[in-house]
Length: 146
Image (cartoon, rainbow, N blue to C red; front, top):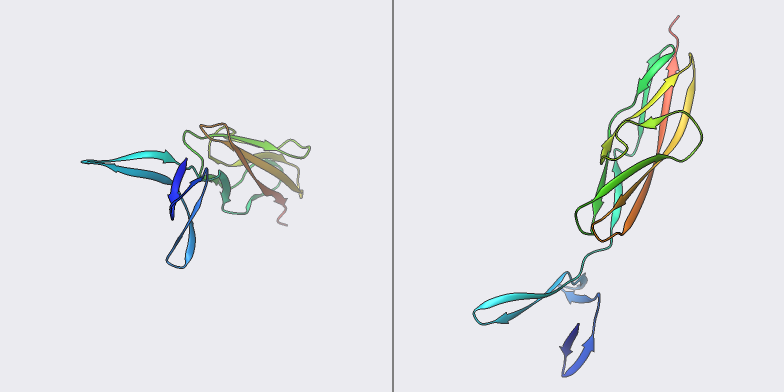
């Protein structure tokens, strides 16, 4: 896109504008074509991904199945629609209960008095094919009560 800046035409693709003492990212450009305002360009912020809460885990008494708390992956930027893919990064038998959903919990069958740490990654792909990832550590614990 070309803009006129002080009598000089400049090419911009993804620019900043100085507003109220700080640089702000340009998200769209509009023109007034009497009587309408028309959007002529749109700048989509980079895709990023965060997982909340930052900690996942669970505990149980004795051996058996264990499901952790729910965590949610939240994209910022990019363009909808978004798709999700949760994957375990290390070896083991735990898995994401909802591997293609933004929200999931994690499952593992536990031995007695066992603590296992697993690492999971969520990859989020936006409607333009951009991918952002985030990682979370998951703790599974079983214990005995005498």
